Structure formats: structure tokens, C-alpha cells
Image 1 (cartoon, rainbow, N blue to C red):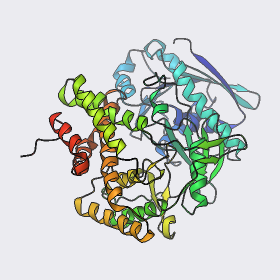
Image 2 (cartoon, rainbow, N blue to C red; image 1 turned 120 degrees about the horizontal axis):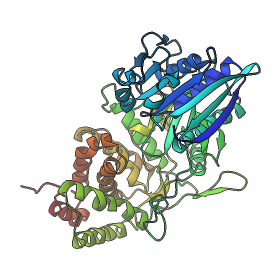
Image 3 (tube, one colour; image 1 turned 180 degrees about the horizontal axis):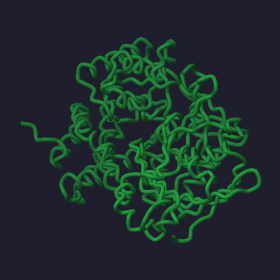
Image 4 (tube, rainbow, N blue to C red; image 1 turned 30 degrees about the vertical axis):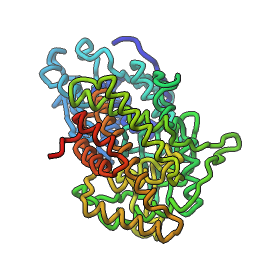
Length: 503
């Protein structure tokens, strides 16, 4: 294989070997080949078993040795094929065993890789186990990117050990469209802890005023905003995770588990009661003023950024830069771009008098936890607010009543809007007409952004699944454009072919 980074670990006992298998299962991804070598009894099979049980999320998973069958395949979250080549007659037989197909679709664990050295991919991860004292020495050689992932899971293990959970059996929870990923583990009493893996993002290319997209759009680049907003909201009675431990430099957080119930039923449809409670929670939040500067540590204060003109226009440019070329197979003309951005300048001017306070930014089904046994606003668990800004409150209402990932039927949409407006009227001093204008603008802004984002996730990031949300997004946009203030944008979208021509 090609020379790569080398990681050397002393495994004190059998439990440490199992933990390494557990950790590697969080590091490897489809297309990875893990080649395990070492003498008989060195722990290869134990490590492979721990790896497979982690991916399966099943501590009792039967993992028979593939010594005689040569390969054992498992259809798991990531498919895994476990090869034992000790009895391989000829290296060329590896192809007959379906190795290439297994590697294309999942992860391959290979014991006794020496038996087919020339047939294995050069970019494999090689792990050698050798006896050392009363324990074992694990030497991992891997390409740079693979080694980086492995070092990351080992850093998280060290973080957990410092927090008193060094023996935790880690399990994958979820990833999202960003660089964040989540794990969980259970304590002896059955309670669950959540770990947020938020790797420091690479500095992207400058796209505006010498700044990369995340900085222009005010997207959080470290854990300080998450901790600041979580604490500020929790102090005001909202349900946000308590932060047990955080490493700001590495971007690793150990946080409270607010629960596993969401606001959708088993078929993925909205549960009316839960959406209504979510809107009530939002109305309560909008009655408050959250300070823009929140102390986080003795040396760091988080300044909540404003959802300003630059950020709004940067987001709506996604429609120009990605959606139109995808839909028409040709980019917009310079005249189209100029007119579109001029329209948005006018619409943003209309927001000058809009009510403004904290925007959670992505207040919709993936980020809402239902807490049945709590009362009031604490029924709604909030888990995604690191990108919060100060701006028009109407934005978050648009996020929930036009849920980007769930179809909100017109009857439910009207009910949720009526609930929110009724609660806000009861608070007093509510400019309903001004709010509804801001709602239409913010809905259009959000859906123009999403119409471009879904295409960018497809074409740039290789994530086609998000494209399923496109018809819904355009339908939501059409609703927003019904407001008289948005007539110029409605006409532009119709001419551009984004909306159908009205009969």
C-alpha cells in the first residue's frame, strides 16, 4: 500500500481492544477497507466483532468467524463485509468473493490481508495488532483523510474519558447537512448522553468582501454560539440541552438528551397538537428581547449577529447561482440577475420597521423534540440554534408553518397562522399588518434560498436526497408571493420559469 499517516496505540487489555473497534466504527465510511493483521490470538476477531456490533447497534449481534466461508456480509446502517483470507487459495479469488462490489457499497474488514496483498486497494487502512507486555500494541497506517477521521474519534474518546465516560459504548446518532455529527451512549441507569462532533470547518474561498460564504451568512463556526444561545434560552424557561462539557478548540460537546420524540407521526406527517404547541412556544419567544451580547466564558462573549442585508442577499443568490441553471440548463442573464437583486434590495428596505428579536433560523421538524410530560413551552425541546441571529421574528414562523421537509397542508397552515396571531394579539402592541408583510418577505427569502440550496447539495456535495423537497419549496414560495408587496418578485419568478404562468 502507499505510505500514509501512522497512529500507534497501547491497548492495556481486552476492553481497550473492544473500545478501539467501537471507535473505528464511528470513523469509517462506505468505501473504506480495514485490513487487520497480527498473530493468532492478537485480537483481530475481537476488534472486528466490536466494530460490527457498533455499526449494528446490537451488543448481542452474532458475528461468526468467516474462516471457512471466507466472507460474511451484514446489511447494516453502512453495509459491512467481513473477510477472513487465511484459507484463500489464490489472491485472484478475492474478486470472485465479491470484494469490489462490497467495497463500492460499504466497508470491508479483512483479516489476514497478507494472503491477497496485491489485490487490496492501495488506500486501505492497515491495522496491526501485536502483543506488548500484558496488553497489545495497535499500529494503524492510513491515508491522510482516513487517518484524520481516526484521530478525530480517538480525540473524542479522550474527551469522554476526561468527562468520566471513558468506557462508553458509542453509537452513531445522526449527521446533518453541515459538518456536525452526533453520537450517543447510555449510562448504567439507562439514561442517554448526546455528543456533538463539530469539527472546525475549513476556510472556504472568499466570495464577498474577502470573506467565505459562512462568514457572510453569519453561520456559526465554533461552539460558542450554541452554548450562549442554549444558556440564554434555558434561563428564560425554554427547553434547551444543558452543556455538561465542551472543548471549544476541538469542537466537541457533551450535552443533555432532551428526548427522542419528534413532531411527526410514523408516516412522516405533522402531528397537529405538536405543531400547535411549537407555534405557541415561538409566540412566547417573540414576546421577549434576548440580549445581543451573551457572556460564555470568562474570556469570550458571543455577539449575536444581525440578519442583515448582506446575509439575506447572499442566501437568495443561491437561487440565481444554482437553481436556475439546473432548471433551465442555462445560467441567468446579467439583466435577470441585476433585476432580481434590485427587487430584493427593495424588499429588504420594507423590513426596516419589522419587529425584530432572536431568530432560531431553522425552527422546523428535524430540530424540535416533543416532551409529552412537560408543561407549557418546555414541551418543545430546541436543539438547533447555533446560527441564531437578530432579525424579523416572522422568519421563524415561516420556518415552522412551511416546514421545508414536511408538507403542511393548507388547513393546518391556516390553523397554525391563526394560533400564532391570536397569541401575539393577546400579548398587546402587536402590529399584525406589518408582521404579515414581513412574514411574506421572510417566507420568500427562505424558500428562494432553499430552492438553490437543494441543487447545491445535489451538484456540489453529492447529496441528491434533498431534491425531494423541491416541489414543496416552490409551492411554499408561491404562497408567499401572493402578498401584494411581493408582486415584483412574483412577476420575475414567473418570467424566469420558476413559477408556472397563471392561466
